[in-house]
Image 1 (cartoon, rainbow, N blue to C red):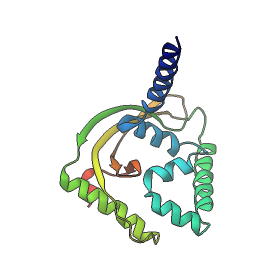
Image 2 (tube, rainbow, N blue to C red):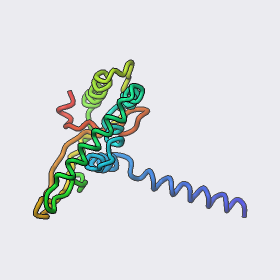
Image 3 (cartoon, rainbow, N blue to C red):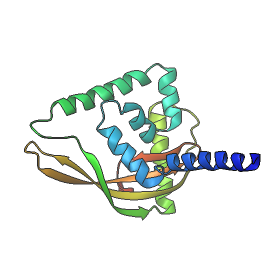
Image 4 (cartoon, rainbow, N blue to C red):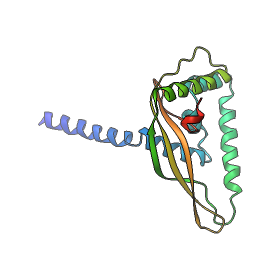
Length: 176
């Protein structure tokens, strides 16, 4: 009986963990990115997806991170307040295409994130991108008349060793 109870408890914990991790990966990362890019409180998520962890650490150590997040959140809040009529902020609609990055493009993604780290004064940052995809996705929003409009966006979603999924907000050709 005790073995059955232990099994059931671990099965339920595994199920909960599996469901919570289901949103990760390419599609989950893109959805999180789009949501953060149009949310009044999305700054921390936006920066965690678009900057190396070491940059965030440098910004926190120099007491600049909270100001950067607040400025981002204020900018998005202003954008939302400026929406007219029935206009709405963009929301994720669907992934149109995913194309696996080549080894050369993965290397360029590493260099992209290392340039960001250098710009913010993070030292000895060694970024390793283990895999990635160029993702073309579509967002939708309502215009001022309430009609749905769509926009296509192309970004690179890469997995950085030790940091998880990150976004390079550009096409693969633009990485280098």
